[in-house]
Image (cartoon, rainbow, N blue to C red; front, side, top):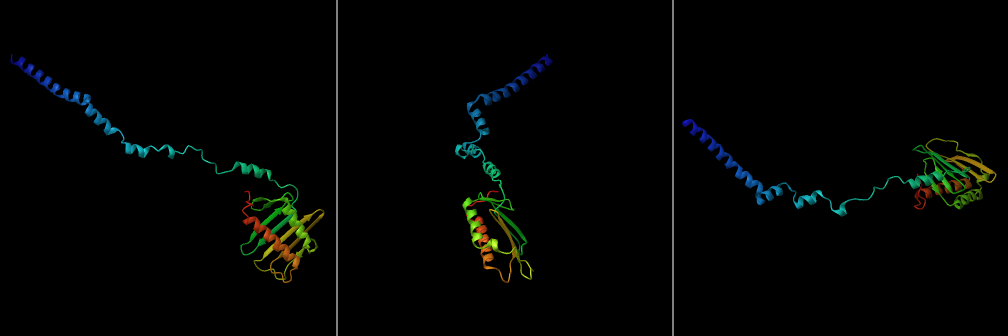
Length: 206
């Protein structure tokens, strides 16, 4: 009899323990207020949502612009020199030991050793040839050098072609008695080159 009472007591204790736990769990699960609080605890606030979600006007929907202009490359491929240059102007030496060369073509194309290309009006190139001829370039001697060729002086070489004529003149800075016509030719070519470099309407093509 006593054993039976002990078994019943144990069973009642277990039932009471289980019933004591289940109501709390059930109320936490089905209580709307508690459920709402649980959701708010794991849901990002509106302020935080704005921090991580860009506004429509802040989203860049445009395709990035290529850094290389393929149109320019195609144009440059067409700018292949044709024929022989009508003017070749070389300048080298100096303290920096430079080596520069420009070639002028009848179609207005101008090229340099650095790979830069300028497109001029063909009339400008033909006019330069005419001016060099008018200043007596074709009558100049082929060389003009000072007795002392030292040191760090600029060397110049100019070749001009017109029709059947072709003439080359080589000279150097520091010439004691430079012919006036040669001085004008050098000044003219240096000015022409400088204008190519600074004229915004003559942007070189790489």
